[in-house]
Length: 428
Image (cartoon, rainbow, N blue to C red; front, side, top):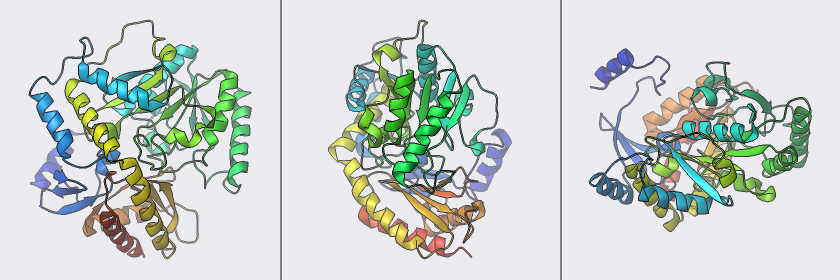
């Protein structure tokens, strides 16, 4: 059946729709931190549907909320009052850290980022946008136009004038040899110089931890330092929290809080984990920014009742069970365990990350040359051992991406680390 399904997939879906593994698998069901494929194989899931399964597979509280809501009404659109949407928006606004916040729901992170860009460029009356090198913000025409990662940028055409800033990757690039304070100072000088050569941009959009880029990040405080410069020029700060939001980094509820000295962002985008697999994205912004549009706008499927019910149940579970604290504790143990392994595997250039957002970058031993073949080999070996992980990275997709559900136990972290250790040691 899997072979037949693969053939049908290839006959009706685009060639560029990537599938993991030499023999792609069909995931049929899951429970907790585990999933099963159509052949009955059980896997420990350390990628969670690309960071969407934030709490657990088949979480009873979310399943119950979806089932009960589906039995009443699934959808009505934003043209009608929606109690679930108002309740979730209220909670998100309170948690966002943005004063006088307004929330607009979408169906994905891509759509959320497009909406944020629409708001920023309308509010600032210009289409120049700053983005980080190695960044990724979605697959729409607008989002692709500012993506700073060649592997995910199929066209150079764009409705935006995008300028790229240094700083999203700490251990590569012209400032990698500097200490953290000097690194931040050099990146700020680069930003100031860039602003001296262009028309005033509408916004800087940045991921606190670059997701598709391989879980890279700057030193804490970089975006706070950027914010002081941006404020002087009236430029907005958009924090793309599609992958970092809801406590995944352990230390903070939002990724931007590692850069909070100059206050919260003007706009925050979110998606993925809040729905625990349901299609929820959204934008939070100050009222004056959110309300700057002077034409009608709706979201047919954004904020639909059944997804909002899922989001409310999922967020409640996450907060009541302190999954942010669990990400900090268990993620810290997992990072240290992987760093101990990496010290004995020449192909591992770096283990980085925080909480349950961990990257393992692979290079050809003794060099800084990316080794995507090694990353693919480890991905396959981990699967054979019963572990699902992801991959990414701006340098030729040579980083392993590890992002389990935030309810991961210590025992499961140890089990996954042992499987990954065997996979890494299998490299020639």
